[in-house]
Every structure is written in C-alpha cells, then in structure tokens.
Image (tube, rainbow, N blue to C red; front, side, top):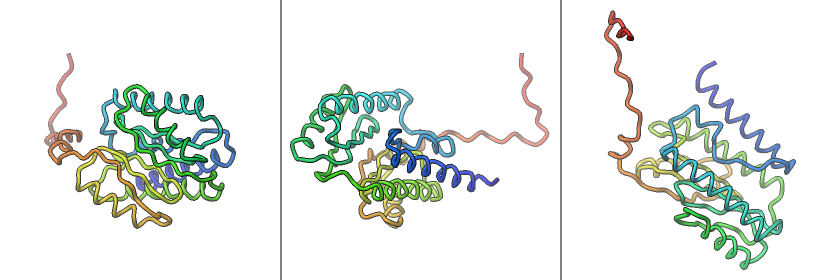
Length: 220
C-alpha cells in the first residue's frame, strides 16, 4: 500500500474512533493527533515540553471537574504551556471560573478562553466537528512544504483552532488550506512564530548517501 493511502487510512480510522467515543460518551476525546504523529515529522516541542503539556491537561481537567463538575463541557488543549479552553458553559460566571482554575495550574504560561456560553451541542454538531478535524489533518499532510505534526488542530462548532511552533510562512499557508476545508466557519490561530533559521535547526539532518561500492565501517 502506498504511504499516501496509509496516511489516509490512519486518519479515517482515527476519525471513526473519535465519532464512536463521542456518541457513546464512554471515552474522552483525544484531538491532539497522536495516532498520526508517527506518519509525519516529529513534534517541534522538546520531549520535556510534551510531557509537561500532558501534565497540564490532566491537572487542569481534574481541577475543572472539582470546581465546575458536570454543568459544563470543557476541553483543555496545551501546547508549549499555552492552554486553549473550548467547549460550552451555561453562564459567564462559569466561563470566568474555568479560566481562573486553569490559570492557577502549575507551568501554564497563557490561557486562551474560547468557551461558549450556550447549551451543550448536539451529537450531530460534535460529529461534524470531529470530521472537520480529520479533514483538516488530511489536508495538512497532503500540503507541500508543511509538516502536519507541527500543528495541533481543535474544532468547536465549525471553528478550527490551530496551535503550534511554526514560521510565518507555514502559519499563512496552513490558514489558507484550513479556510478552504468543507464545513469550516472560522480559523483561529494560536501560534508561536519561529524564524526560518530556527526551523532549519529543528528539522532532522538528512543522512548523506554512501558512494556506490562503499563498504560500511567495521564495528569493533
């Protein structure tokens, strides 16, 4: 099977699993794209930053459950200690409380509060958002000169939130791609912009090809 087809298949499987988990409400949603990561470039965060982000998400969700409970649906996404809050709350007081709770979590550098003050969305809307996320990830994988795993994608009510450490060129290109995706109403960018020189340092150095007829060095 061609690599392109494998990537598409992986995305389809991921999207299907997410839809099922949403409809049954038995498994938490994981929108970070871990299943796709092995197919594309490595994460631009350090391994320590990735672990720290996972810890932030777990601690934040635990404290939100303690302070707000089941009267809100809040998703927490952390990237390089910048935290995005999406979902729904019933009133402005709970929206403010959610932000205050997450701001106090250890190692959080910034909180972007995108919580909507509405009733919980329908299962149809949740499924549509999951499919948009899958479509966006597929488009980023297909795009030239972009590393899909440099982007974290979250979708809420047709609004796509993009996070990551990217250059201005990558940010602009990804935004135009996502805007053209079916069902996308709006694109919100939460990027840490880096220079092209820094990007070059982050990318793995390709191995130099061995001249024909060269024997590998003997191991001691």
